Length: 308
Image 1 (tube, one colour):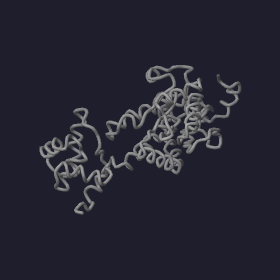
Image 2: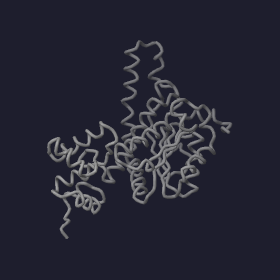
Image 3: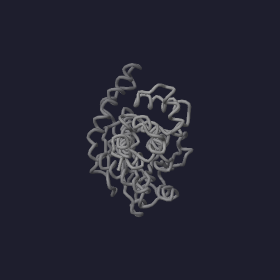
Image 4: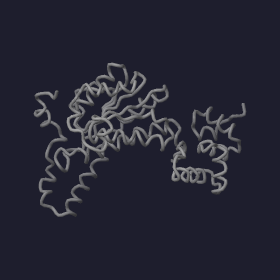
């Protein structure tokens, strides 16, 4: 049940305030409207930049969990929930990670991804239930995503995660001092009132997407899934990814297309292995051994001393 003072609480949220810069947006022509929206969007990266010290702490927590067999679970409702599911779904093809490693749950279930499930976010106990349905344990990390900070479904999930003894993160677009939840790290990019009052799919959604990109991308880099600035753990699950894999090998090693294709086949389609095979002049078995000794980091597998 929603709290009786919800109306009063909403009045205190910056995400629910009127934006003084857009009060006459209903009188503007199309181009002027677009310029106003664009000018407001320009403020979002600056708000995220201020939160980098907190995002840094969050990444350390996530990486530690991954190294210990834990998972990162996003919990959200509406736009926030969809962003969490989106980020989670892109990790396996981008970084070759197990689909279980990063997951997203959304109020109302997966049908809420394509059509709003009004009221689902108001059931606090469902957040905890949905989280525990994933066999959530103290090894995992729960990351709540809520522009307003007060979404009952998300709050319920984070409270359950704390009871389990897991680390908790919270991404919200309201001021840190207003956060009433006990979490390990709060990330609070305050983007100000939306262009359209309360439409948090706009600046707030953009800020949340940027933060999610930063957390998972940096975590994957820390796990050795990037060499220079290239994805080297991607899976060849589509024609596009097959060609990207070959292009990656060609770009990193300088070999021709035919050689890249041939070595990738010898490496069972594993880009990391193919790169080490070529740059170190070793076969597939030795390349895999070096990667294992280097904890999966291509640079370490190439530059390390493996003669002893």
